Length: 89
Image (cartoon, rainbow, N blue to C red; front, side):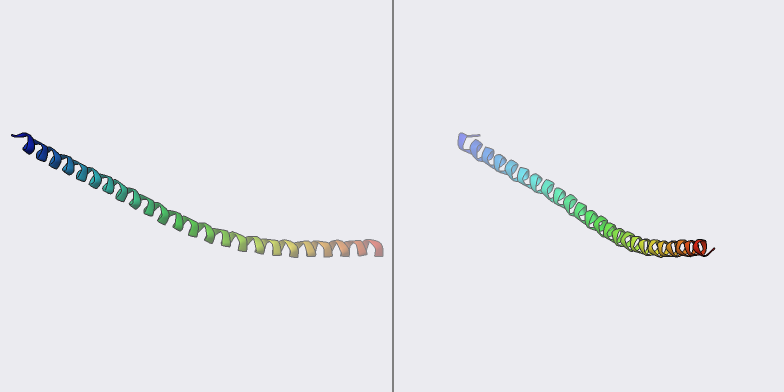
């Protein structure tokens, strides 16, 4: 092997090594991108479920507030009737 041939072989190996290193790095980036895309999909689904749950809880809260107001009005009416019976007796 002559010096010129050795350098050409060495340059080819370095070029091949660099190429495989770039390919390896691209594969790593591709895997990481896939992981991130999966995470985003999971977060979107979780966010959708949480929003649905929030809407459900808000509707339940509204119904409970309405029932509470109805009960309060009935109790106040009973108290009023009791007071009027007390004053009438």
